[in-house]
Image 1 (cartoon, rainbow, N blue to C red):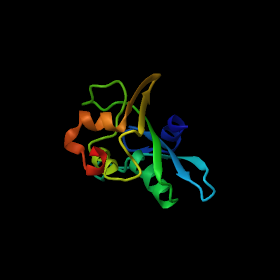
Image 2: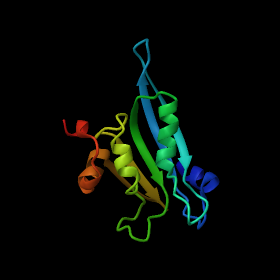
Image 3: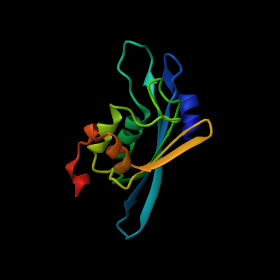
Image 4: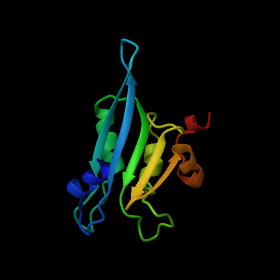
Length: 141
């Protein structure tokens, strides 16, 4: 689903197409747990405008729909030129922004994929690799 979102919905002036899907959960008033997914694609229609990342768009949608917990984040897209990984991870804008959100915790699963290569880690592990982006002290408890 995320790969198709990137290919079909992304709007990037140089075809750097990225898709993100968030698996979310919440408890119902009847004591059950329900799940849903929210998907989005990145937008940067011109080189001189600010990028709008797929992860932040998907998150805004789940927040508006009042979902309370992000179980997993999937990111599909090509690695950036400066990346040393085979997949695309959340960028320097998304990492601190998402880390500040209470719906995401250190146990949230992060799955990044590109051309058949997948990398999986927890949100906490990503933040260990980028401690400068840590924004939420609640994650430290």
